[in-house]
Image (cartoon, rainbow, N blue to C red):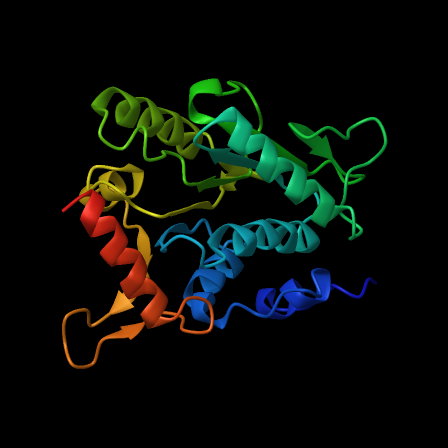
Length: 241
């Protein structure tokens, strides 16, 4: 038994990364990740930039592997460079636990542990057809360069749909979880929310709550204060009214 066994995700994060605090502002997203350990959950999260959504998600993947080391997980992002950055961070986290890479199966793009589980990372335009998928995570699968391009949006949607359809673990559907800082209503989150066949659980965190009212406040003031958010928005408004 390791020091990480049985910990809730919010407790695992500072245990595994002592320089971090529990991201209580993302509790609902953490709850969706924890549901993925026992349910074929379909979950989406919209979160403003620089609020630890990716860091939390990477720790969540390790959390899932600690509960089932045999699970094969795919992590998808908007570009191969970004996917490799996430893959490196994820592998370093896993190496601190009993479910990290085993010798002979230890690269940034793909690694496996002693139980046969592990992680494959990819981008939407570099899809690795044929890889096992027991759980699918997508983190910012489209960036600001692709938001306004319908061809890019279609390609990303096709890749996510492909791996969602083949996501299976031990004969039953596996969980699919996506998180992003949204920039277009027709992005991968928007498309899934617009469809009726599958009901996606959706967690939405606005950067500013009750914007424009007397009750205006920052979503996570310990992370990004209201004053700083107002200054950033004013700067962006000058460049793009």
